[in-house]
Length: 467
Image (cartoon, rainbow, N blue to C red; front, top):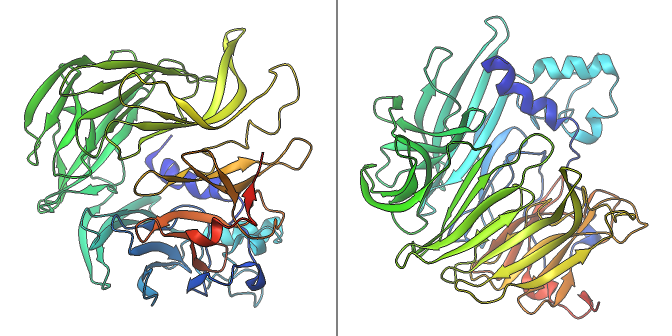
């Protein structure tokens, strides 16, 4: 597949993904604060909250936007015409205005859809915050139909709407992918970790901002620290686990080596930089089982881990080496994996027993309550900054239509349903971007608005689930 076809396949995929459900004004809790009342949202990139929980960056109406959560004044930072959600497409004779929104797109005829698709020449990607929450990185890919080639530019946008170009990639640039990643704290490099070069071979892309070209790398994988400028990763020649400094020089090595045979790899680093979670995918094609471990880098103590599905969401909670696991539960049957349930589980740092906040088990031979598509992790689980609360999309009961409903769960397993009426969409009653304001607020959005809901409103006895 050519570079151009790969780059633009995301738009074709987006056409079959439903947009965020629309909640009526009366469906929002009275305590909700509307941050932006006039939006057109559609698919990726999703609204992203800054590390300090005070800002949200998002793409709406073909613009890259930012808004302060406590003092909402939406700022349109950059217009990207002819990108998805841009409200000025022309379809048919005299038809215009908002034809980039999904509800109107699905009402068009085939010829009108093709006409609209021909106008989708630009794409916004990325939206990744800097460590200090002062700015975020995003990219714009532009396609030239005559040359049948695309160029990409990466920008740094401050919360005050100042924009700086960081990188430009033309069709002849020797790079494996788009430059949308972590900006180093000295702003010298953009790092895109885990770019898939060939099946089973992931290599980080290090982009030299000043020279506007990629830098040769001796690593197969890099994960940034959440609290310093250091990185943890896999060295290319030795496949050894290493820690590197801000200049990408190896400062520490560990007795762990990634297998040569792999179909995918993930490496998590705890915020205190003491522990890692290592996952190596050993399955391929229709199953994706993995093997790995949790490791204390100071003591070398390991806890063996394994799973049936590589897309299981696993993250550190910020409480030392403790982490959670969220997703489908699987079992091997006749040489392939089958879903037997779903779970949200907390795993202690040491040898303590893991405990479930939520779990459902089903008979592999019996009817499943939509678990193949309705599962924790789809949409992704959201966690409060202190790891005390989780927002999770739980599947509707068996016998009901497919889809999930957002719930709030605390560490004792107490559950509340997010307020709002089921409006018939797959995800109800709206989409969640995550927690903000030190975990006191949840940022949510539908197809036309961005809004904030106090956690105290969700944790109301009216919304409490007693099961």
